[in-house]
Image 1 (cartoon, helix red, strand yellow):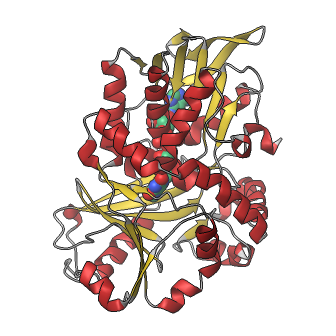
Image 2 (image 1 turned 45 degrees about the vertical axis):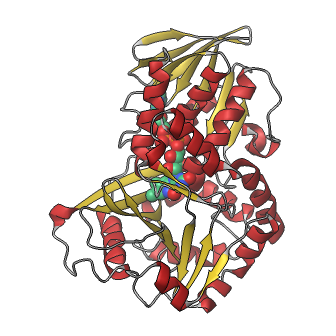
Length: 420
Ligand SMILES: Cc1cc2nc3c(=O)[nH]c(=O)nc-3n(C[C@H](O)[C@H](O)[C@H](O)COP(=O)(O)OP(=O)(O)OC[C@H]3O[C@@H](n4cnc5c(N)ncnc54)[C@H](O)[C@@H]3O)c2cc1C
């Protein structure tokens, strides 16, 4: 069965869905107002972690106790803007509820593990096929802590990871020093997760994937999708500012902007922006050998094609609210603190800042599945913190749904109707 599929959004989820749709014999048209992999997309500036072990949802038991801090400290690792609280409250309540018990967190971890397992290998193959193999590295990632005690404070989450089959190597202060000679010695304990990988330039990776799709004949309509024409239960066209795009199937992969399209396809989803920032220091004097997450700032430091990047922070705010660049400067200062050989005072001309929106559902799982209005529309968004790593299997699932084949993993946990 070959169909003409409109892919709405050319971030990493849309790009890989398009590749897998082509492999399954479908014809593809992208609808995307920006540059594929451009700065408007979360896929541009993320931390690049292909962390198949990132199975713990953001909220866990006891997160509710931290909510006053989220509200009172606008520069903390997770902050909620007061003015946005009334709009965010329903999402926040669901977010806290989904992590209320260890059983719920374990169920989410199981569903995420199925989605993320094998992701580094899948991405490496995709990148190689797109002529961008150099962008994917499979050399593991590090978690660094001031002391072993700091790791033990998070032991419950690591225990769930272990139950999901994740393995790691514990590193003493000396072993960490040998691996990471430029890291500040105040980090005296580490975990090395060998199964994980890393993308050296997520924006360039998406651009290469989309270029490959276009080289195989796909068109790109440079506009925003605004709706659907559905007649007697079948999709006839996607509506855009440039007119109707006739098609037989569509994939909603517009990241944080997917919510209104999902509603037009019959499904109300509580999609929220968890905004994050990055800083890139150009021509860095020092940096990590292996991409690493620092436990004390919950941000990832890694070398990218453009320089030394630190990405992280969660800000619950409207996607279009003005950026708070102080948050990106906090990341810069953290980075300078992690690697003492970087200058104590960095010239602003050497720092680049970016804000992006994680498309997040409150239970930490994406929406992947048929729409309620018609089986011709597929939901593929809401991957929150794990959209880069999770995109590889998502693309395969999308192609299987488009082709009427059985999905290769159970997709019930990602059902777009679970919030109804
Ligand atoms: C600071 C930060 C760090 C992160 N680190 C990691 C990490 O290390 N590993 C990881 O796996 N994930 C990470 N993430 C999450 C990851 O970046 C996202 O989950 C992922 O990029 C989402 O991809 P997407 O394709 O769904 O959305 P996007 O990349 O946002 O792409 C959506 C596209 O849709 C287009 N679009 C929007 N509206 C419309 C419309 N109406 N019509 C047509 N097109 C439209 C947009 O222009 C955009 O190009 C991080 C995110 C942030 C912010």
